[in-house]
Length: 609
Ligand code: F6R
Image (tube, rainbow, N blue to C red; front, side, top):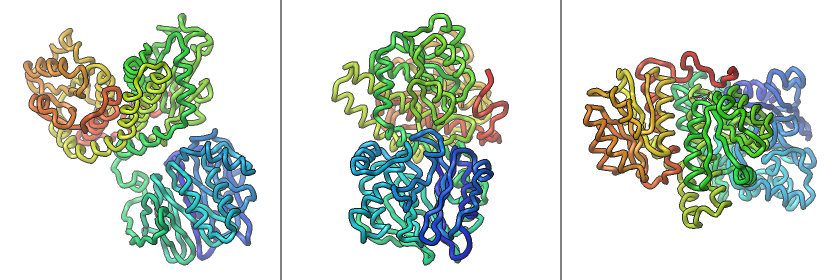
């Protein structure tokens, strides 16, 4: 995710301070970097694609004059990772500069409007609308203060943002603001800082002020002033002493990246709900036209594909074939053809097996569509159309937040296709869209209410030698993912399969105390699933159930249960039901003394076949 930084210094040059702070934000992941400073009525700027050290070697990031400035590390979302798209972005006259972390949902409309009024855009980013809007406000009312021009601009913006703005008009100020994207201030006797994250200024000060959603801040050498964007009222906020070690700070106080990333799922899901409509529209048109559709991926991404095959079938009446990428060439290499469409799903966009399947399909003239988290990755380059899921970098090796986001995007795609094909009533569509909108909150509630309980369950079963994970229908994908998480980070052998298969063989493994995790949404499969739970119980299995709140029947059958909120539609259920399983795997690994972020023998991006 992008990182922003700004500083107003009483003495000395801002550029080296910004440069060092951006280095400390590197862990957030980025593809481009930039800085802007103010000095003697002029704005100075340097930016380019590439890592900070590479860009510094070419441009000397420390060589910008002035004691006030902003900086940015960019993780591309709108617009490829190119110099022109790197932040800061400036207005038409090069007098205002902005850095931004977040997504502007209504940028297309705003851009059109601004272009009609003569503004010239230099980049393909959503961010650039912010700086032209500020310019516009100032043009319309030349006596307006910079802070008020920014405040009025933000009232026109839908989406998430943490921004920092500087201008030659008021060369001793930084205006920053936040909605959903993180923003913190750091204070010491000689400077004020704003940043996406505490590590950016931790070596300079341990006094921080946390900015809340809907607040705008003016920074100057006198300190800071916080106002509410909605009505300009002043806010008083005390400083907080931060006692984190730098290593803890990059994990925002969480002991591991994996736990931090599970906790980020609600905000990542919100990002997927801000996707540009036309990408969904374009992709669903390709899917609609295809004679056959393969959903191709590895590992966790394959489980997203498996869940998606149920979504496409149930909502849009489209049969799709989920295929493990490493098998694609063997299984379909000869038959895939110009009428086939491949939807490749890869968080990294660099997985060798997935890219090999894509290459095979491309050679045979099939249409390639991509879903990835990394803009500029190979998958984005070889896809006819791609969607970037905007989850931010995932550092823990085990995929968590990227999985739930993949599911959200795929369910939106299935819904769009269902609408296109006339397979869904308006009422059903409205209902599903409303539930989809609520999912971030649902996942938040699950984490809040169930994490403690899951920790206890992990303690209880930490010495179990093996586990079953069972579900029916779309929950088969959830079961497979729960099992993969447990195996890969807690090193517990586990088996997952559709619950109906147990009596065809695996049930012979069950003996008293054998832990069986059941995924139990209240869908059409539930009645049969209760039968499967009984079969396991009759053989002495210990049932751990993930159920809907108040599902007393299953709660009574289970030794242990975890509840998710009521009323999650079947096609969306994996998004909510998998979070408890990710937490279970995490706490099992911790209980067993393993480091969940870096499981043995595994790499985050598997670039060999
Ligand atoms: C499991 C995990 C892997 C990846 C797989 C595909 O937690 O992370 O199974 O899902 O290697 O990776 P991507 O999605 O980058 O293609």
